[in-house]
Image (tube, rainbow, N blue to C red; front, side, top):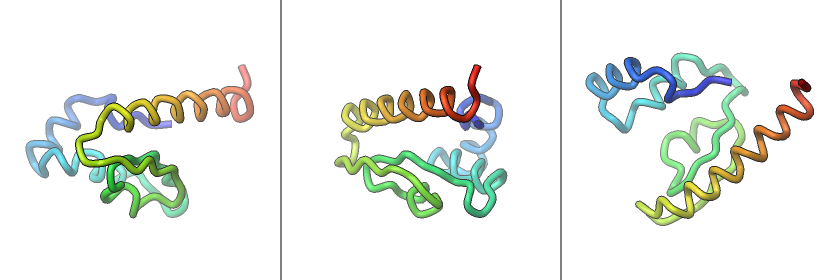
Length: 90
């Protein structure tokens, strides 16, 4: 699992060179391989929804951050719990 927000220096460079709207897309293009991209998206899904091989889309209105963040938090916890229980038992 890779956190696309873990390295502030990478985000800063990408934002300066490509713009804020590209910071996650550029990282995924550099590390993604065919059939390994799963995404949880909101709003209209933008480029991430189109790039993902699989995923969950939470349709929300533009700038409707509350419901989008709430749905993502629930989905993140469910995926994390599943992975800890079935993929990498402790």
